[in-house]
Image (cartoon, rainbow, N blue to C red; front, side, top):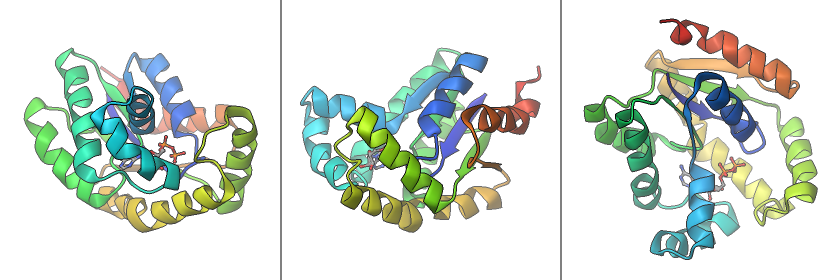
Amino acid sequence: MKLLLIGPPGSGKGTQGDRLAQRFGLAHIAAGDLLRAEVQARTPIGRAAAAYLDRGDLVPDEVVIELVVPVVIKAVEEGKGYVLDGFPRSVGQAKVARGQVEEAGATPDAVIYLDVSREELVRRILARATIEGRSDDTAEVVRNRLHVFDEATHPLVDYYRDRGLLRVVDANRSEDEVAADILAAVGDLAEG
Ligand code: ADP
């Protein structure tokens, strides 16, 4: 099973990605986690990415593609499925990545869109900020991340709907309820 999880910041991509990975034995690949690890390790990619993360802007396409695509291809070559969260984050990224993963048979089977109201997102992110202390969870940066989602990432919803890959899940509810809906939405892919 090869899945993309798309949704705004605070929609639960990380949490639900973990649960899907556990349930189906998939590699959970989170673009944001990969980027933060590079920043921590002060690699060239990390140094190029840090300022974008701090502002809540998208890291340049070539940087994030170079980081994420090989991890996806490796998972598939090792015979694993994947759940990829936080990538692609724009139609441009989707198109370039598609060209790179097609040959490896690593294109996604389905795209789950975690749909959440703006009020619920803001509530969750501010609650999380007090627990995790992520530097990009301040009010101003959160506002920018939501704006970037609307401008750059939300167009992927139509892009994948047009390709027949989109499955929308109402993610305003509890973690368990959302997880159950995701399972129902990918049930056909789990058979066989
Ligand atoms: P969230 O979805 O809550 O914003 P992530 O961990 O997915 O959290 O992303 C955090 C930050 O990492 C983003 O604000 C952005 O700066 C960077 N980032 C993550 N994925 C991408 C991507 N596909 N393209 C560009 N930048 C990305």
